[in-house]
Length: 88
Image (cartoon, rainbow, N blue to C red; front, side, top):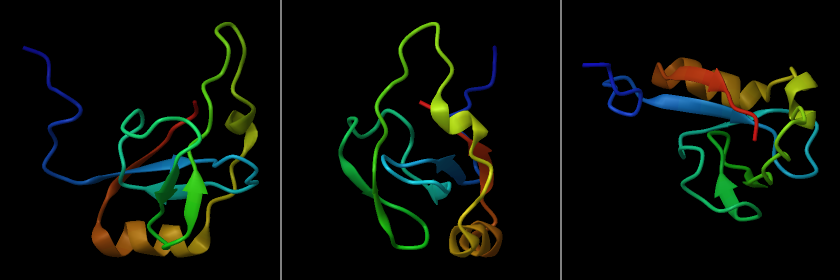
């Protein structure tokens, strides 16, 4: 049986680029849990809008964004979250 990536004992942080943002923020809300355009909180307590899905066959514009919010980086480290970049 394959391990389920959503059943992990270590909490996960997902680095996403919100609508209109130029930096990645971390959130513990799983991708797909909130619809596109909704506002979600980040680990640095800033609210961002969930990005819209990329058209099939195209690369997400957020893939090139590598800069991470320093406050979210500190929160991920302090809380010992596993983290991953997530592009819509």
